[in-house]
Length: 291
Image: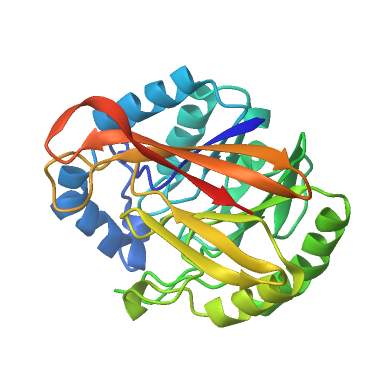
């Protein structure tokens, strides 16, 4: 059995002095204003610290974080997030895929997190990490967008690389996990959607994967997209720093236990986090996915 922990959207507090005059005429100013006005009240570092401590007690083989580590892509935010990532353990045991808040400075801004993106440095996404019988495929949907939009885009070049990559990993008999920030399933607000989700779903329908892990919505979701041999489950974790008794669901994380079963796989998802009314972190439920 291989055990992963998945959480998303930690929205780490912005260090003092992160906003500089250079960002004043960019979308970063709007993101900074949003953080100061509401996000800093919804997302709490002490909540995130409790979640990460609970994850550590689970002793996962690997940790997957699906984006939005920071808020407006300031240099000081990237540096602070790197320090936080180092506190989680060896970079080989933690994989990050970017979110829209991580991408306000452009696609090439993820260099400070290179060790958490893949084992070798390449210039483009998707990036892949292979651990035991599991392949974690990081698809980057974080792109700069117009003000008031939080959409994501894979892009044609990335999708063209993704199909052959999935075929090669599938031929090796690996359990393929797509780690992505924006949901690949329809529904939700167009302002926050994955703009080319239909094209991504077409790639997955043809080439296949065993599981999709994503975030972005700040609410827990269980969906599916069509694959070549059946449905591919899509599991969304809410923000790992959302305080209980707030507007959105309280912080939680998912344990994902993968085990080979004959010609397929069995996946058990363990849900842990805060109850809506608060109190200590506890088990909130579990379910199985037959892949």
